[in-house]
Image 1 (cartoon, rainbow, N blue to C red):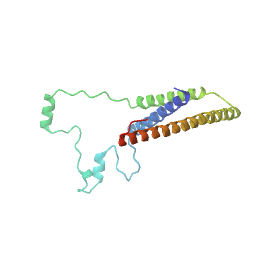
Image 2 (cartoon, helix red, strand yellow):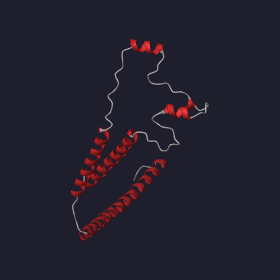
Image 3 (cartoon, helix red, strand yellow):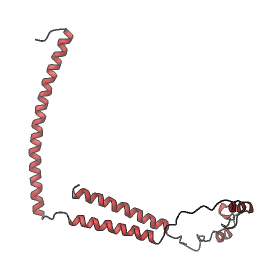
Image 4 (cartoon, one colour):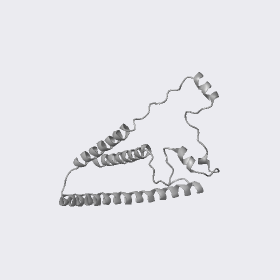
Length: 173
């Protein structure tokens, strides 16, 4: 793979890492109270008490996590406790993602440093060389196209003659 393709791949990887890192930071950020006029996101019971509207579904009392019906408590003691999946370390996860982003940026910098350096004059000289090469190849392709068109015309003429002979049931000359 050439250096430009590697740079494009590395840039795509950096973009993906950046989006995932920012998304994780946004997802894992603790709730923040914007104003005293908004209910407290960490205390929904206080928000329900502050909302006197009985038709509002948020005003309904929320069941507390520890308050379960007696029948459900009896069944829970009989069933084996399910093991919860291991919790992600919310402090280490963003650090690891940020570290991966920094490593990707360093790899990108190394690829950029590996690019050959050339002056503007060298680049213009190379462009002229490539344009001259493109002109030569273009002329060669044009000649091949003209030869192919000539051959196509000959084949079409022979095909038309053959179909005429078949239609008229003539023997070929």
